[in-house]
Image (cartoon, rainbow, N blue to C red; front, side, top):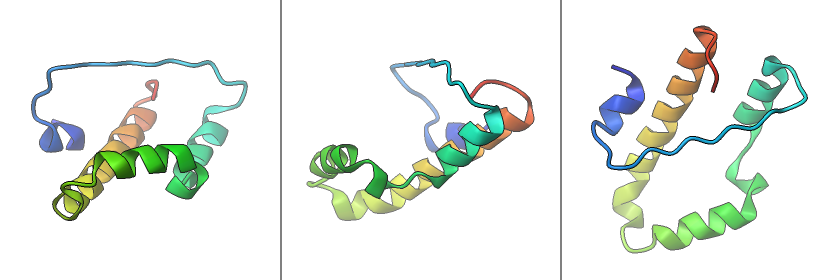
Length: 83
């Protein structure tokens, strides 16, 4: 069971996106880890609006999701799979 499965044990939807990037996996991975919400102002705004009603309750949950997503990306990378 992955860290993401612990946070989201069941789901109703699955979505996958794929994009070819003209860079090595190490360069892409470094860029992925370096990006912050300040680099994505529109996404930050939309996610902020989405979370207004329960922002205090969701802050801890959001951090768990973020940590689980990072752990999943690292695990896939270590296993040589696509991210």
